[in-house]
Length: 113
Length: 112
Image 1 (spheres, chains in turn orange, green):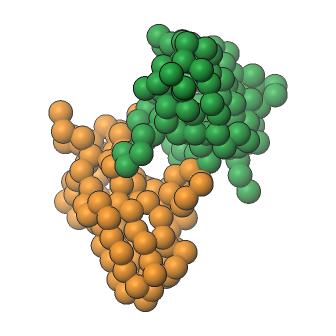
Image 2: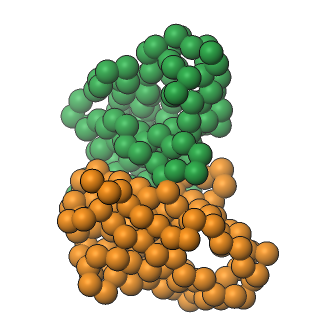
């Protein structure tokens, strides 16, 4: 069974530029999560989808971050414009249903200069 | 406001000995606790969990203990192996709300 796929693996941009991350969850998983992990901290949930609907986006900085999961499968997370403090690893995870074990992708490491 | 705390950023243990990783939480509503393990350049992988109705859960070399009155849980690895060297995240949730809160992690080094 293929795991959660994410791309790109690394991205370096300058502040005020925009960037997008892509996630393909495990086949059949209805719930998809985006996390931000800043160095030295644990993953922090940004947004949770159940199929193509948003369940929780309370910690998503909506003035600059957006995410979508149009067909209930793949998802993209966008930052526009990026700030220095957005430098982090962005992790995508999926689970068969909410409250089930989450499976994480390898993450995208973002550096904002 | 850190609801899940792991006060030891790092831990070194000799191969074959016991590794004990500690975790404290502040939210008494948490009723489900998990440990994730993370290797460099990989995402976290689920290791073991425990519900608040239990005080111990065992899976092979890994045992998690929960002390609800102290709001404390610990992960024991016996015996420790070099392949256990990784960052371990403690996490907690309120099942009915689904959201998982992660601690900052403890980096474990098992020395051969």
